[in-house]
Image 1 (cartoon, rainbow, N blue to C red):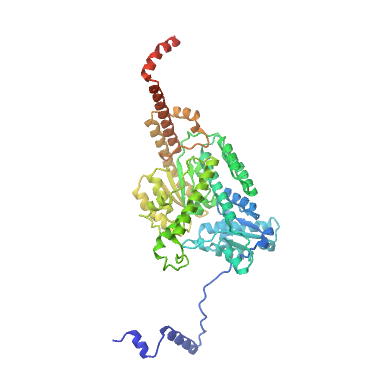
Image 2: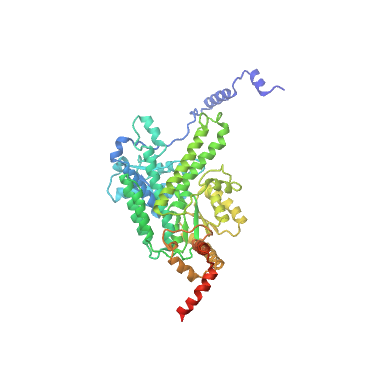
Length: 566
C-alpha cells in the first residue's frame, strides 16, 4: 500500500497544509462565512515612556520590600538625582482597592500591591488635590517583572487594568527590563539609568536594611524597655538614609548605629522560642495586613523571629542562573533559545556569577560587621539545593522554588529553630499547590518537627493566629526543655545563669551566642559553660607553669584562711 506522500503526489497535491487552507477558504466563501484574519497574539501595551529630560519633574513611586528598605531605597535614588517616594506598607484598605479594580482571579499579593498603588494615587488626587493629568505626567511606578509559573509574571498587566478602571489610564508602570529597550526604540536616553552606580546604591540600601532588620529581630524580644529597639532603629534609618542621600561612605553611619544599638538594655536570660518564617517571598517579607503583621504578633507572644533576608533571595537568583548555565553547558553549540548559550563563553559566565556571589557575601559581611550583626550566616545555596533535591527537583521553578523545602529540612536536621512557620498567600500556585504537598512528606519523616503552613487572604486573621498560638505553645515548651537540659548538663542553676549573664559581655544587646540548639537562651548557657571551662583550664595551666599544683597551693593557703576567719 502506498504511503500518504505517494497518494498526495498522485492527486497532484504538493503541500497538504496549503491545500487545506485553500479548501477552507473556498468553503467559507461558498457558505458565506467571514474570512479568517491572520492569528495575532493578544498584547496589552503598557505606558512606559520615561526619558532623561523628564527626570527633573518626575517622581518615582516604589515599594514591595520592608518599610525600612523602601525608605532607604528612596534615599539612595534621591542621592542619584531622582525624585522618589516610598509607598506605605500595604494594608486592608489597599486590599479593598485591589479587589475592586483588579482581576478577581489573581493571588493575594497582587491585590495588595496593585491596590496599594491605586490607594496612593487616589489619596494624591482626593486629599492632596493633585489633578489626574498631573499624576499621569509627573509620577512613575517602578517595579520588577518576571515570567514563569507564578502570577508575578502578569503583575504588570494587572497594574494596567487596575489603573485604567480607576481612571488613571496612561499612568506609567516601569519595569527594570523595559528601560533599555525603550531607549533604543526612541533614540533618547532612558529616564532610569541602570548603570553600576544605580545598582550599587540600591544594593547598599537593600543590604543595610537587611542588617538593621535582622538586628531588630534579634534585640526586640529581649529589650527591657518596650519600644527602645524601634526608637534606636528609627535613628539608624535616618543616619543611613542621610548618608545614601549625600552619597557618602556608610562606615561612620553604620558605626554610629552600632553604638546606639549596643546601648539598648536587654535581658538575654528570657526563654524565647526561635521561630523561622519561610514561604512565598512577598508574604514572608511584608510587615502589614498582607500577613496579619505576623512578625510583630509572634514577638508579642514571646517569640524570637528569624526572617529571611532579601540578600538571600539575591543569592538564590545568582544560584539559579549558575545552575541553569551548568545544566545547559553541554548544549552550548545548539542552544539558540532566548536564554540559550549559543555563542556564550560558558566558563566566563560561571566565573562572573561566582564573583557576583562572593561580592554580595562580602558586602553583606562588611555592613554586618560594622553594624554589629555578629555570627549571622547567609544560607548556603548548594546545601539548600542538595537537601531539597530528593523531595523537590531543583529544576522546578516558581515562587521560592526548592528553597522552602530545603530550609525546612535544614532547620530540622540542624536544630536551627524551635518552630518553622511557612506563610503562603491565598492563590499562590507554586507555594500553596506544590511546596505544601512536599512539606507534608518532610514532616512525616521528621515527626519531632513543629511546622505550620498558613495561608493569608486578607481575612481569617483570628483563625490563623489561633493556629499559630497552638503550635507556639509547643515551641515554648521545646525551648524551655532545651534551656533546662543545658543548665542540668553543666550543673548551673537559673539564678547562677542570670548572674553570670549580667556580669559578662554575653548579656549585651549586640552579642549573639554561637548556634547549638534552637533557643538562643540555651545557646548562651552552652557558651557560658564553655567559657567557664576555658578559664578553669587556663588557671590550671598557669599553676603548672609556675610548678605549683593547685592542691599544694590550697594546702598552703588553708592555715592563712583559717587565721583570717578566726
